[in-house]
Image (cartoon, rainbow, N blue to C red; front, top):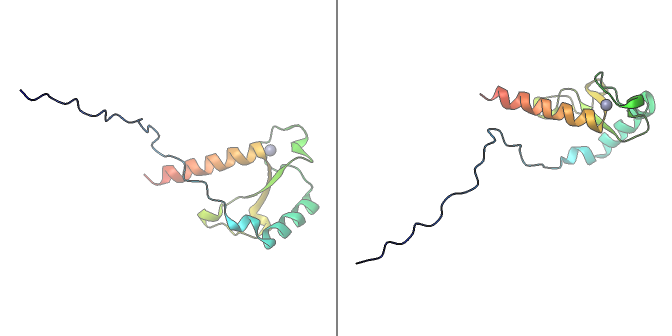
Length: 110
Ligand SMILES: [Zn+2]
C-alpha cells in the first residue's frame, strides 16, 4: 500500500490590509535645487514653524524639523512649485495629513 504523503504546509501569512501602502519611493523632485530653493524662501518668509491649523505642538514646532507639504499633492495634480500650494508642517502634522490624503485616494478607487 502506497503511503499517503502529507500535503506540504500551504498556509501563508494572511494579508488583511485591503489597501496596503504603496512602496515608498523617494521622489527626486524633493531633492531638486528648485524645490530646496523654494523651501528656503518660504521658511525665510513665513518662519520655521508648522502652519497646520490642527497643529498641537507647543509653539507650532518652531525651530524644529519642518516639511514643505503640498496642499494638493503632486500625485493628485497639485502645482509643485507654487508657494500657495505649499504649507509648512511639523513631522506630526505632515504624517497625519499624508495618511489622510492616502486614505481618501484609496477610498476613491472603490
Ligand atoms: Zn504641526
